[in-house]
Figure 1 (cartoon, rainbow, N blue to C red):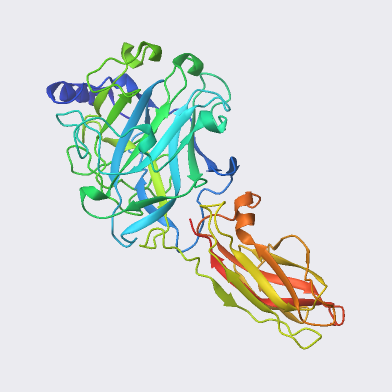
Figure 2 (figure 1 turned 180 degrees about the vertical axis):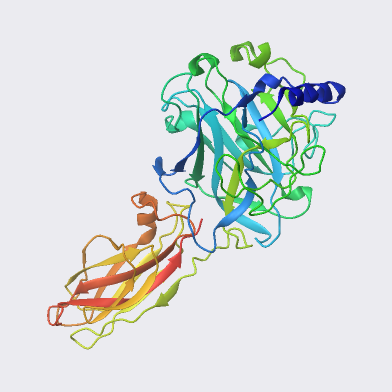
Length: 458
């Protein structure tokens, strides 16, 4: 917590910095409620899932991490204000570029659940915000417009699904993940300004709807040596005092932001329709928190996951046949194959088709799958190649003649992914799948193919 002497020192420091916009410290508000995980919101299906990450496989990893709450505060902002914060994706051991597939934000609000109206966007750009003086992130001029984001979310367009408080004026704080529903963002990483990313957050709730209490993003900071709060990326890099979890500092995340009021130029007058903001005025221009050690915030809470593959957009699905098929009662060994790529990004695009052939004709069967690991246990005279829990697709008839091995059962697995019916089918998930069919002359009356494993692409 900031002591009154620290706040006074911050004011003195800010007043001495003529090149920066003077900070109204009423924006810095204490967090008085627990910060809770709300899960992951699927922007494709409009549903929340309980998992806090998009997947737990080797190809999904944190690529940007600005989550250390060095203090217990959030940034207050009101209707019409867009906040832009910057950082950089490090090279390190996570590859030169990534298909990012999950974005996490954290906010406090006093609007009730169902009325929380916020927007956010993620940019892969070095065109930073600026207004002269000490507030330049990579170039002078205004921040990128709302439509420039690679990926983003609008509460109002989605029907206001985000969680809030139980009563107007009662504070609630949440961490929420968003998984790609309209594609993925290809982001570069490295050591230069060309690898910079930006993040936009705004709340569209009016002060009255919040019980006249401001709301906004959790503030995070860097207790390092830089006088402007420059961050150092590391995982883990310490322990968050609120959550107790490992946290990180966004690389090149500065102790300042750009605040834009409905695309008003720097120094311009915000539109009258935006009402009265914090301290009796809305802001457009540079906003500086004060710098370490007096007021060591370094921007907004934000975390990004990526595929870590180093070849953005080059995901193949790592499709791999495995396990052993059961010879059926007619002496035929079923064959499994696939065409296409499993992915979550393009539901209207090419199919990912799984085919089981050389089955006994005119018999019912189905494909089934699991996301809890691969297997090879003996089962019904063959092998069960998937660890439970097992999930079934629809029953089909193999076609052909019942006297020959000319039956085939095919399914478009991308249709299952895009249906949103299984929260486990997300980018990075490892899936094992196998076909079961009837074989009345077999002792078990069933037949099992070998299996195919694959990783779902962003």
